[in-house]
Length: 159
Image (cartoon, rainbow, N blue to C red; front, side, top):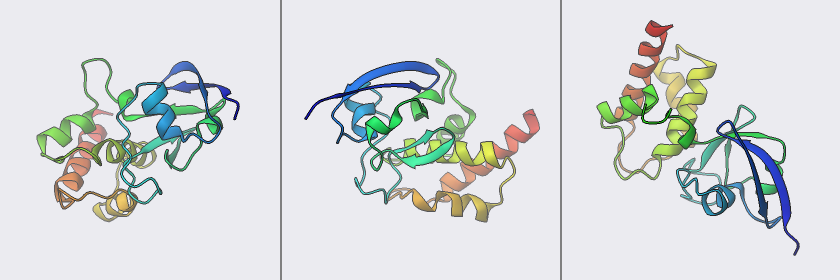
């Protein structure tokens, strides 16, 4: 099968890559672009560990083909921090010990940033519903929810 050339934007940078037309966006990000934050938890779109933003839409990168990224804007967990400065969500996840093994964390961070960009004042119930597609086997979610709610409050104060 012939390879496909794709031009896209990843975390604000213009990127070109060549991929097999059957290759997932997750595989492209990890294997071709060395962006290993997104994880493959299930490969079927059920766990959310591979969540990324594509044109301001939250998607499971294991369900999207790399070739479909042509002309799109992709945001991954690597794009949250600005150099050495962590995003407030990342800081709160550390502060609240809202991560353990780390498999789900990148997808949850991307998903919660998407939520807070859309709704800067979510209720706890809204956060729980928003993150329903992101599975975590280690934390029990309470610390994650507290970190998100605390981040939301801080971001509202700062604006």
